[in-house]
Length: 349
Image 1 (cartoon, helix red, strand yellow):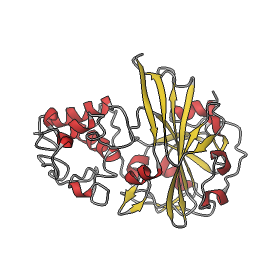
Image 2 (cartoon, helix red, strand yellow):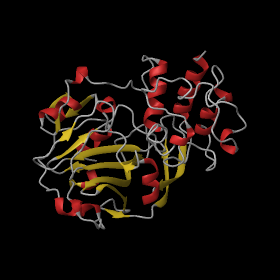
Image 3 (spheres, helix red, strand yellow):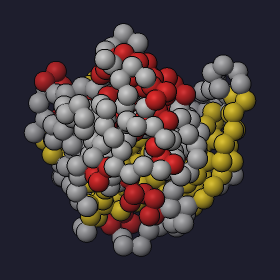
Image 4 (spheres, rainbow, N blue to C red):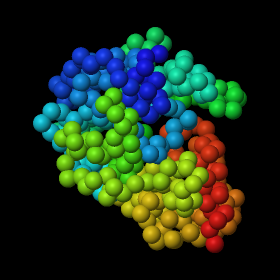
């Protein structure tokens, strides 16, 4: 296990040997995806998630839940180009940008730096005709990852923080499933790198710095205010933060990419972005547009004071493909997320 990989797992970047690999811009811009992840040159040491020169690691305040997988994120913006700051939506990344997300499981979550199995690496590449998504599944030797356009199901197992054995059939999404979530106003788009979710410190090799400030100082991001003036999501795991803010932030990252006016679930009328201020629209005593199994026979998306009589909790607490929400991206229930939302709904009058 390299120091760099351990650092990324813990949300920091530790000092390492200078990256020598060069990103293959031509491969990134090709209409035909590379068969192997290594062909893009995004890593100097892919097996240890050591990025190539110009590829910057980053993290999010609140990551989307994916069956408890650990994630390593990187962004690459070609030299001479800059992303434009956006106060509410995803940064406006220029053509040539690639967002990299690797999913992995430590064998034992109590010692996350040991025996890490990398499962897949997803690329979002901004090409001339828009964003494109490709999933690469890692080989057993952890030497490289192979393109899987049709997706794949992989058995994974681990020991959780409580020492209990866990397992699931992890689902690598196919091309259409990627489009099902990554759609904004009918255009394919990234989800996570928004100002409110990037506005936190990261321990780079050069020292700790706020990510927004660091991106601006590198010339990667233009038009950004000082981080103190930018929006910042509360950490959903911070028990000292506002319960309402934490719950809304959880729904924002896990649900609002679909459940918003510009999203694929717009016809539901349930809009879950953190800034939504219409109580009925974010679910308060809101009746579902369509009844059926998905409602569980319940009357309201959110029944104030009664989490067990709220459709929102019912669907998040299910693994039935005809009931569960989100529809893709998980195969097991996020117990901590459900507990947070139950506590929140119980507090609503």
